[in-house]
Amino acid sequence: MESTTQLENIEIFADSSKANDHGEARDEIEIEKREIPLEDEEDEEDDTDDITETSSSVTDKSSINDDVVKILQPHSLLPKPEAPRGLSNPNNNNNDDNDMSLIPGASSIGKFIRERSNEFSVAIVKRLSSLKENSKDDKDKDNDNENDVTQFDLSGLKVIVKHKNDMELKGRISFFSRSNCRDSTAVRRFFREKGLKFVEINIEVYPEREKELVERTGTSSVPQIFFNDKLFGGLVALNSLRNSGGFDQRVKEMLSTKCPSNDAAPASPVYGFDDQEEESTDEMVSIVKVLRQRLPIQDRLMRMKIVKNCFSGREMVEVLIHHFDCGRKKAVYIGLQLGRKHFIHHVFGENDFEDGNHFYRFLEHEPFIPKCFNFRGSINDSEPKPATMIAQRLTKIMTAMLESYASDDRRHVDYTGISNSEEFRRYVNLAQELHRVNLLALSENEKLAFFLNLYNAMVIHAVIRIGCPEGVIDRRFFFSDFQYLVGGYPYSLNIINHGILRNNRRAPYSLVKPFGTGDKRLELAPAKVNPLVHFGLCNGTRSSPTVRFFSPEGVESELRCAARDFFLGDGMEVDLEKRTVYLTRIIKWCNVDFGNDKEILKWILNYLDATKSGLLTHLLGDGGPINIVYQDYNWSLNS
Image 1 (cartoon, rainbow, N blue to C red):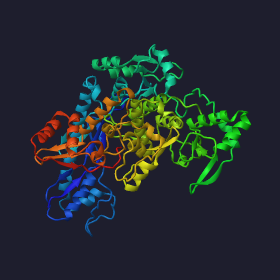
Image 2: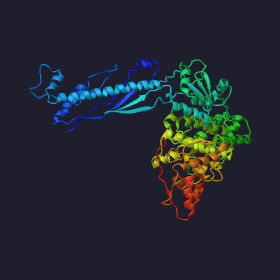
Image 3: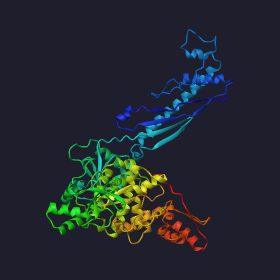
Image 4: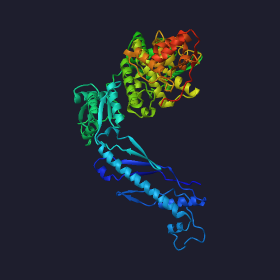
């Protein structure tokens, strides 16, 4: 019978206390357990004796070359043999060697194990000595590989050496950046690959810091890198130092002292506080405050329905005439202005304002308001900023979030990191600027980019607030009930996708259109549906296109790029032998946007790489039948 014994997982560290005082790296030795075969014995009782003798022998210390290596004892739960009755020495209970000497064959087994232990110790210590010498010689050459893992085998053991990074920086690396800047992205990626901590000051997220950037560098161009309070330069300077091989030494020299506490170095961004901006109060706010206090707001029965919190146009005109000393014509004009600025709405959405027995209510009393996730207790009564300005700021903040909390290919998003970020906090606050924004002032491309970006931003917000839509019920709430208040009206993900971008077409498995007749949101829908929009919308799942944000001036070309990236991945596959094309289920759900099967395949040809395009062209050209199979949709979260 072949008996085995196992060495527990142990870690041995070379005695490098002196080396550490000089800043040298310490080698960490990790030893995996491996079975050691022993000689066959005559009976099973000797197996137990083997383990006991091992326990006795491995507690010894081997001193070789002044290095001490400790071998840990076997697990305490292993059984310890006892000498047969009548052979034990009652006067020497603590002498294990005398007891073991009474067991036949135990001394020879113990001698064998002690020899093997000594061999292991000698081999390990010799290897450690050679590693320490080699690491000293090659330290200057291999600074870029300090985190590499060296692996080698010894007889009966497998030893892994991990070189620890000894670069302990006391100072601070900081750099100014912008959203959607390739040079800033390159700097950020380089620092991450080097494992260096840094402070990024994105002047799109913190616009008040742009003035500081100009004062420190004399230019507003980014990136600009600082080592403590010293300006290092931009991407060109970083690439030059990296290519020369002196980056690590330069960083160590410049950051060997702590960052000064005065204003000499760029300060880290302050979290939890918004920038102080001049808010212009809407000229109609003073009138609205009087109307909110003086109007008889009541629940009324109209058209067999109970309409809550409403007032008549006649009542509002009387209040305006009495409190502002104006004529009836002037009062009606004021009512029209209040309706166009979305302070008040007709209860059935039929007109802006008319005198008489027509009923209205304030925007904050609309029944959809509690469902809007960008509504936080009160309506934004400030003068609405231009829609282009708000859209641009939202896009820059969301882009900054993705650059910090998404993978480089944007296929994976760190929603937990986003939820705890300053960028997300500022985004949520900025989303309140959408309450009464005038979207009709946007051009066609600006509308397209705005709703694409708003959809993708709302998905991130929805995932953080209510989670990923995996079940049928969850998907209904996710796409239909998660809403934003934008321009005085509610917008859900379904409204944006199927009502606006698809020009009021039915959603999959739905019998009704998003908008009814006379809905004023239809004025924002494009005249012609662009099927490329389906590849610019990310719903937070693994089968959806990657998340991205679009610019108004390049939205068409960016959508074409998004479609090519999607079909280059898992969105489309061709099996030439089976004459089958595998397509994303998104096309099946919205096939009315693409046409019949043959038109779909011809349309896709414009967005394929050379390989897939050649295969599909071959199938379309030989006149044979082509099978289209729609892939299963993966609803799991793209985190």
